[in-house]
Image (tube, rainbow, N blue to C red; front, side):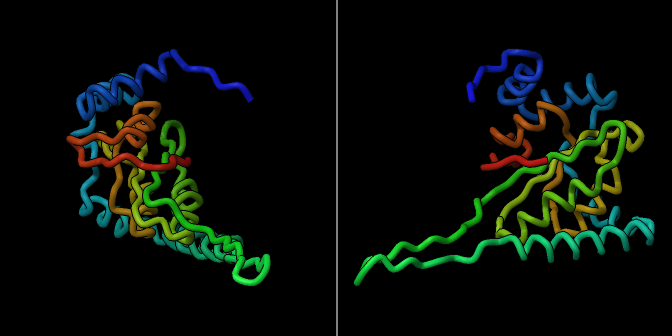
Length: 190
């Protein structure tokens, strides 16, 4: 394939975040989501509160989805292999996780806790040691991430969650935002 540079508005939003950090993220949330979050990084207490507030049927469905995705993902992890080429000559193949992954969970017109499960569980099964999750600020929830998204993250033990969306969130995950304590990630999925 052929690569081309993106000089459109989405690339500009990512560049704005790289240069402006948290301030740029707040401005983008105001323009795109109609709300400026009080805090871009969601406190662990808020995540725990969202887990406790999950509707019991929703929590049960999420827990079942987590168990099923975990089982299916574990079955997909390739085993290491050793190929003997001759005396003292062998090729060892093994799969190793990256250190840090970022997840983008959409939150515009609908709520997608399934995106949390389908992205976080495979990373956990693979052994990724550090994860960060981004989801747009929600006007209906005072600029916080949707509580169901927070609840799903909490059920999975994810405690690094950011109220940020769009290209700005992707830029923040890719480059990091020092004033938020957000370190860059190696891979972004969503």
